[in-house]
Length: 208
Image (cartoon, rainbow, N blue to C red):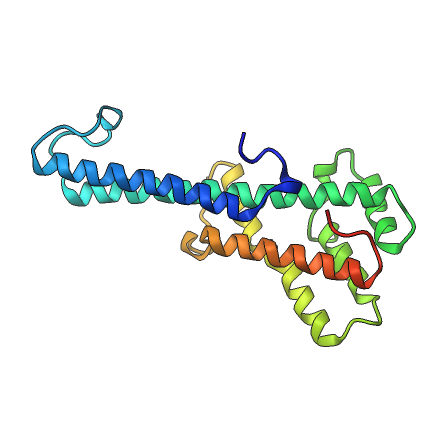
């Protein structure tokens, strides 16, 4: 499997996979247009989806929808891996209660039967990091503001992850175009960098 190890997942690897899939779909789009011009049926695996006689507009609509699904798969993989990485890091830190962040994480986990029941925000793991950052007197205010903004960026993207994981049965408040895979990858990278900055300033072990 390509993306089995969240702590070692490179966001760019997911983006490259997304581009590979999108390029393959573009080849099939071109072939479908060519078949239409020659009044031929499309490839066998598209029969029933794009029957003979499908217009160019219909072909484009179908492949646009296919690429959108690939984008959603990439987004889901990126966010799910980030969530797993954050939770694995929290589990490791909670075993060493030598600092206030570790103690807070241990307390959160003691109140939950399973790791996944500990929230990320709303008083959960990410908020524990934010509160710890507020105690670092050596951190300049402009750095604090930047880091806290970076930490909070994932919260909005998590709405897409929940929407996908639970079957898309409600309407998202923001259009999906607001969450391109590359932007989600940048948001996650910014979060990781922010957590590592906090860890460095607090002389903690690096974020895994």
